[in-house]
Image 1 (cartoon, rainbow, N blue to C red):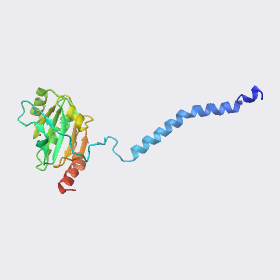
Image 2 (tube, rainbow, N blue to C red):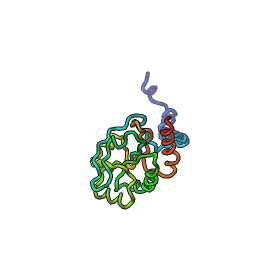
Image 3 (cartoon, rainbow, N blue to C red):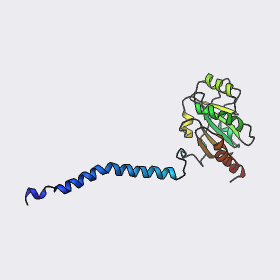
Image 4 (cartoon, helix red, strand yellow):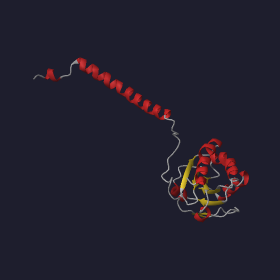
Length: 196
């Protein structure tokens, strides 16, 4: 066998160049199809699943917000009540946006609304609540974020609906708007109250 027999023919070299040149286009097309399929699925891509849904809520033993007239947030404060636990901070712009909706929710006698003040300065949190109103029946401070880690917080604001028996029923990542209250939170509240 001569060395000329082992050398690729010019036609084969040309086809190989086309395949190599087309490879990035094929990869791009495959990614575009995958992304389009996700977008067309109707699934909320911003929804982050929580491993805590359906499990008992982590224990709460947080100190009170100094200067507030609200008690500290502990497990006893939410035991036996349908409770919405909201993680907030004064420096969080979306927290400020959802705050009027939390004030309205705090008037619903079926729900106990409590807050975890996340990595915030005491005086800033007091100013925030003094300026916008205080919807919380109890507030616990989480200066180093340990409680937020226990609860699986990705970013704030986040809210958790906790059943009277302590089971986490619903999680909302990001701020509430009226639509998410009407289509997500309230159906979860109704379901919890119906006992199903």
